[in-house]
Image 1 (cartoon, rainbow, N blue to C red):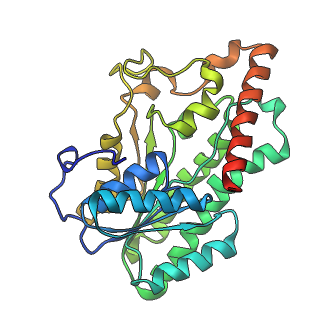
Image 2: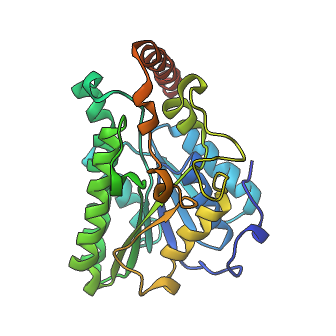
Length: 303
């Protein structure tokens, strides 16, 4: 189902006509919301994800709701060769991208002493390495062709104050934050801008399943005492910020990471420090819930 209507967007119709945007992790959650906003404003949109059926269904759903062009493709961004092949297809389908959103991610809560190498790699290979290789593959093409572009990476506020119990994600997102700052300088004089968004509480299915397994310490749907504005974010608010950073109208914004969290990280860090009070029993319940979610996802990928 479509997430919102044109009145939810703060921009004029047709703002992004002629733009071509790739959104990784674009089949669900925040990625799908950003894809919908770009489509509604006239952009051609490409969405990647590991689950081909989910990506294809999302592309069809968005086009059925709004018309336009959305191309969904299964792509495992942990594999540089897969990225290159999928990027070749985009360039062959109409030329250079004008925008890239590094949104693909993975996360789960865990005591750091309980992490395995495989668990660490499951997050860092997507968030850190995958996002870099997507950016690099597109960037080489833009530089070779002398094209202008905007890259937006979806981070978290943990890049400023750490992420206890989500260390692989916090480390990986911090790396993307530094990539944003570094390439904003290195490639800025050749017309490629880099910015990032650090969302606060925007409840999604993936967040609920792995960051609040079994509903423990579940984030309230409407009012949240950990957020000064006393509510969670609305999808349209994040979509509007992403569109602003992608569009040439923000051409003088470069190298910035913008929090959209109602001030939560200023009040209490915005992370999972509160889980320091959990004991072995709570962590075992969380591991079992996360394991069940992962098995469900694997089963869906084989359908």
